[in-house]
Length: 111
Length: 114
Image 1 (tube, chains in turn purple, orange):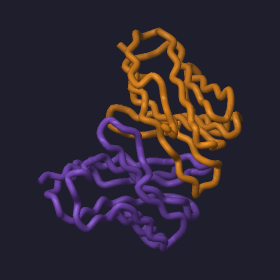
Image 2 (tube, chains in turn cyan, yellow):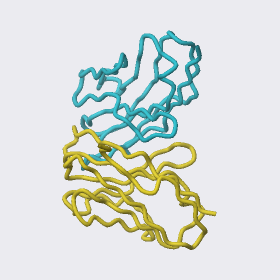
Image 3 (cartoon, chains in turn purple, green):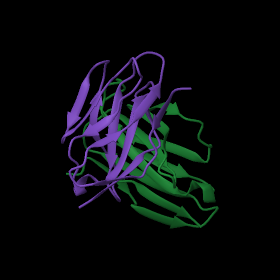
Image 4 (cartoon, each protein chain N blue to C red):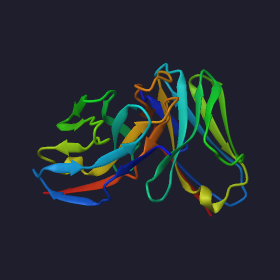
């Protein structure tokens, strides 16, 4: 069935390091793709999204490009901060706007 | 000015009890959802409603019964609670059912069944 696969965490980085979190999806057609972030003890917040192939979503220095050739939507940030420590979820739309999530990747950024 | 709110935030109860979780959104959205996040942080949709009508019921045990008295509210009632129901339950809302819609999540309700 339709699914989303993310790289396993935790990912541990030093401040100002480059971040990549890999995400691939399976689907028929071209679903909308999302990255959500969950800070400790909170609900999920939309970080960015892309609704068609080759779109690039960006927000707060994060970006991800919808690549239909590789069915991927990898999250990147050039210079992470301690405040970026959170769990990041990749998701795709599964019809009737239901979200199908990846397993989440925990990011820990140290000073 | 909270967009999506849930009550209670924490719920600790005994096996076999019946409990309800309430969700309200003040965004004027037509569509609301319940998601379950297990202890490994895995998130899965349970239900969605659009204009008070059930749209998605994702093979959830019938001990779980959602109720939408109006578009701004979607409550979740759970009968005969089991240990495996322990999880964080998130409510969410979106403008509609379009696949490009953003979903806005509540802060979650942490349910612990003893």
